[in-house]
Image (tube, rainbow, N blue to C red):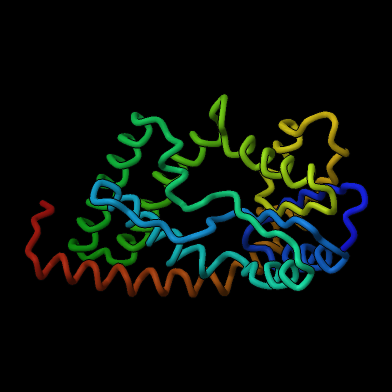
Length: 247
C-alpha cells in the first residue's frame, strides 16, 4: 500500500467477537502499512519466583483465552501479504507483572494462593464443579488486579504505551491499524500527539453484555469449562495422591 499521507484506525473489539474479527479483516483488506495487535509477541519464561504467575497464565491464557478469544491469525496473514509491519502491545505477558508495584504483586500472589487453596479444599470436600469454577477465579482476579493497576498508572500505563507505538508507526506514514480491547480504544486517543491526524476510533459491533455476544460465547464457553473441569480433576487427583492437607 502507498504510504502517502497517514491514516490511523483504532479498532476497539470484544476479544471473543467474531463480528469484530470480520470488521477487522475488512479494514485490513482495504490496506495496511502498520498493524498493532493487543497481545504478547513471544512466550514468557518464568523464573522460580514467578511460577505462581505462570500458573495464572496457564489457567487464563491456555484454558480460557484460547477457547474464548477470536483467533487473529488471519489479521497477521493479511498484514504479511501486504508487507506491513506487525507488532504487539507486549513483549511477553510478564510485562504486566514487571509494570506493577511490588505491593500490588504481593497482593496478587496472596490472592492467588488463597483462592487456589480454597478451590482445592472444596474440591476435596466433594464439590468438584464449584472447585473448578474457583480455580478459574483464582487466576482471573489476581490478573485483573495487576492489569487494572498497570492501566491506571499515571505514567507508563498500558494505554500510554500503545499510544506511543501508534505514534511511532504514524511518523513513518501510511495506514496504521491498531486492534485492541474496547477500553483501550476509548482511552488511547487522549495520549496521541496533537500533530497527528485525528484517529478513526471504531467501537465493537455490539456490547459485551448483549444477546449477540452471549450467543457467540455459548459454545466456546462450554468447551472452556469442559477443558477446565478435566484439568481441575487431574490437579485434584494429583493433590490427593500427595496427601496434602487442606483442613
